[in-house]
Image: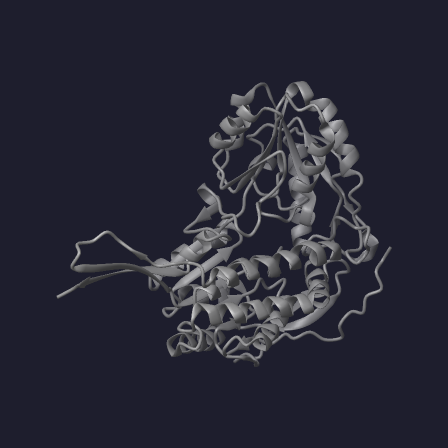
Length: 492
């Protein structure tokens, strides 16, 4: 049933710079909409280069003052843990804002995105005072130290599918290591990040350490990428935009660039699988979670020919239990596409699949048109070959391409025949095959007998066009936000 929810009358829409909300230099705004209804939620301040300048100046001043960067790791940990506690205190409000802005089910925002964001922050907070510098082997009259220092000012550019969740993958390690940060949310989903800023200030984060500037990619995003006083950019989004940031770095100060740019992840089911029920549940989650608007979505099902028909029969039964509907309805498992143009893009891929000769065996339509929202039903194509557009390009919607294979070697070859390499899943009862195939797949994360990216302690990032320059999550995330310095001291 639909949950009785009070929609906020207003939202904070101004940039958060140097510890306070303030208007933009030019006063321009853009509309943000509820994808489930098509109705406008708010007019959000549209930051540009001048506002990015102010935010970067505040971040630099905070960094140089040492108000955060020179705090003891133990004190930074305490502040970040307070921050996590306050997010948890406000979890219902943040989850609602996230759902209204993204179109995802409230159950997902409340039970997945927010709890994982909170635990990610706590994990990195606890790591703050537990990571040691090193001493290298040296002569007895030399002290040779290898120390980590914060890189300085970090710019984070966020995607629209997981605004808080992915933001915390960047905020937590960047702040834990002593940096200041300037965040440019996706223009489609700025509201939850702007609310988060006040919670960070309440937790005691010094002014200027966390700054948030909403705006458009070609203005605010470009200005952040080109800024001469930004030391690192961490970007999650499309490969097309990721390439811009590499270009911006080359044209400015050669700042460090960390990219996570999507995927076309395979889900491989081998012929020794006999119990289809848990497997199809994971496959369904792999391509339907977050409406398929997920960079690691398992959208290519590579299945042994011998078990294809019974597996697909069971899969379709499971997929049909994933209700498409009002994100505020507790029974809904698939919400709305982020916006009308994106919905039309996904529908165009479905048309392309049919024109290429793939067989549409489930779904394929826009639904719930009367709501004014942007909903697409779960869609399955069979008879797909890996050279088809629907098998090669990231659709970012609830669309699965089924590819039959004869043996393990063909499964691995097709899995790796992609420009991407973010994630993969593998289903088998044979431990030997699991090890050998997992090691053969060119992807940053390979899950066996489940669909998973691991938890906050596991590095996340891809191969090939899926990733560049570093990893989110785990201790590896600290590497991209720190400099390693060698100090060689000659004793007398």
